[in-house]
Length: 362
Image (cartoon, rainbow, N blue to C red; front, side, top):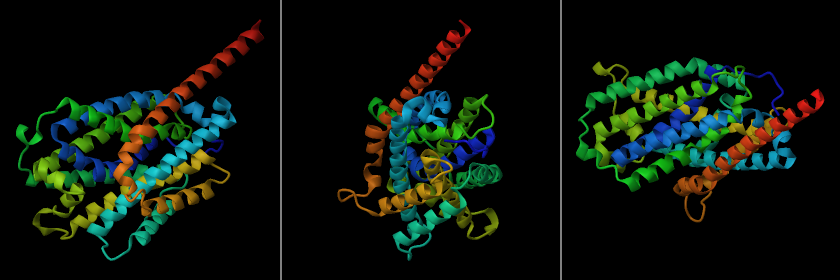
């Protein structure tokens, strides 16, 4: 499935992972975590620990997803591909719907949603979703700039910090903590795609250690953003805002009036991260379906499905309104089951190789 030499380093893989998650986490998760108070913060920590355990297992399945037909058979390969592609279509549709809604509210009110969605997908498709090495180089160059700009944003926003009291955070009730833990783990199902990237990595040692550092960094960013939002808007204020991080950006400026519309810079960097995330979705679609044959067509079809999915109502509601439930009840259990299946298949093939080798020696 991955016979080409289009390979990247472990550092590039980590930077791609961080950039892919950074935009959605800041736009969709940081505000909800701030609005949830102490229970949501504790659930974020526990959910991340569960995700780390899962990623540890996922790293061990890299060789299975590099040659799925060998380990799972032709039927298993295409069944797994169907599951992963459907996940990409659903997640991409929700992300596009939310991004278009945010852009219409804060940047381009006059443009209709279909046109904005098509333009966003076209930019991700042409600029962010092609070639592992191209994406790796882009992540390598942009990574320090993106993190540096967001760090500056948080430092400037902290000037408006009013403090966080225990009363504002509330008590971390067991029911709230458990719900948030499950929610964080369910939303982290995107990590289930990592084995498809491992086949593109030149190094084989220390993979989990490098990815773990990337996950720690993402956790720190979300915790930092949630803390700033709590200090600026408070728990109730963050809960009243649809996209608190965008309100934070538009209300932050450089001292002395330098760059009067500096909020455009924050929004541009966030939009870059969201484009990179959508590029990852399209790129994974090509890899899962077949890197060489039909990759372009699959990414094109996947983009069209995502565009339609972001526009169509589902039982009178937008897909984003029950996305969390779909992840929790369908995709999270399915991805866990596929991870266990891949581990079993790897062990079975390993035992067969050992038996064959022992037979030859006798």
